[in-house]
Amino acid sequence: MEKRAKIYIAGHKGMVGSAILRKLEREGFSNLITRGSKDLDLTVQEQVSDFFSKEQPDYVFLAAARVGGIIANSTYRADFIYQNLAIQNNVIHHSYLNKVRKLMFLGSSCIYPKMAPQPIKEEYMLTGPLEYSNEPYAIAKIAGIKMCEAYRSQYNCNFISVMPTNLYGYNDNYHPQNSHVLPALIRKFHEAKINSSQQVTVLGTGTPLREFLFSDDLADACYFLMQNYDEPGLINIGTGNDLSVSDLACLIKTITGYQGDIIFDSSKPDGTPKKLLDVSKLQALGWRHQIDLKEGIKLAYEDFTKNVFIKIN
Image 1 (cartoon, one colour):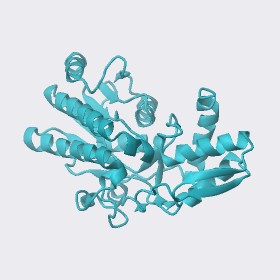
Image 2: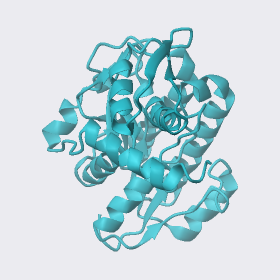
Image 3: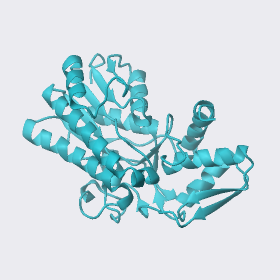
Image 4: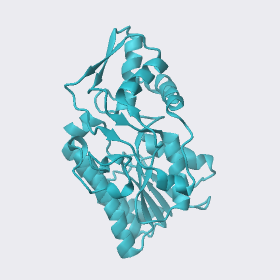
């Protein structure tokens, strides 16, 4: 990508989009296009059409999505499939119509079967049933991947798809019901500490294994792949390491300085028992993550206490 190329970051206010925006700014890109949802509703085709016709971006990072944790995915099933399909359909199609030179579609590791062999290779997509709780979101993301492949096949568009593992970092969502497990636990342990609560309840048994990638590492990988990857197949982005939710809770407890007990509510769903991505394809290209989990949680916790907790209290 040339430094003066016009680059559109869809979803720049979210955790992923804002990380990509920061990365591009650090690398010296100055012709960056952003629009908040109040100015551009990506689910409305007419608005997206007018935007692309006017701005004519050279490159697109499609990081906009309706996202949430296991409770949000289970509760808002219709919203998750409709809104994500609408966003993807509009942005990808109008990128084609306006001759965008390259588009990156960001998916999610939930596209893979619930009981996929571990670690999960890219070719395991569509080889088995999905986890029920996030099935609508996963189906939308699979459709986005296949849409990029179809536009590449029929129209020779350079549209690529990347599949990040579980993410956390700056500007994360800490909603008590709709957030993912890591930010949810940061909030729980911090509030328990300041309220002197005797225990923190973690949903599920604590046995599922999860992999986590810091958002700035993801942005670095996206920047790397936008310049070095032009293949039709999707590519995983992750660390290659996982840990149990129980161990994650203990790590966050230590970092936040909480002194009470941890209990697990086994009446709540665990989701997929193990989800570790095979990142050998990405590592063979020369990219590896830089921020380990302990360091990343410290950075996220600092961001939470300085920039998030004040606003929600």
